[in-house]
Length: 104
Image 1 (cartoon, rainbow, N blue to C red):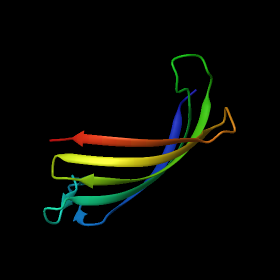
Image 2 (cartoon, rainbow, N blue to C red):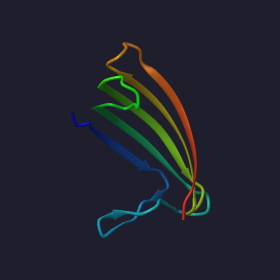
Image 3 (cartoon, rainbow, N blue to C red):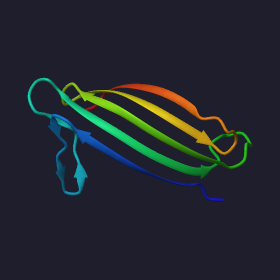
C-alpha cells in the first residue's frame, strides 16, 4: 500500500528573474527597488493515507492559483486560492492561504 501522487506547477515572474545555475533554480531577483511579482498555478492529485487515525485510503485533487511578492532578497509574501476535493465526499473545499517567509 504505497502512497502516490503527482503535480504540475507553473510560475511567471512579471518584473524580475529566477536565476538557474548548475541545475538549481535560485531565489527570485527583482529588477529595481520595487520588488518582484510572480503569478503561480498548480494542479495536484494523490492517493494515500493522510491521517494518523484509521480513515483508509483517500484520493484527493487540488487546484490552486496565487501571487507572490518578493520584497527583497530575504522576504517573500504570498497569497493562494485553492479548491480541493477528495473521494470521501462530493463537496469541494476552498481555502485562502497567506504566507510571510523570511529566508537567508
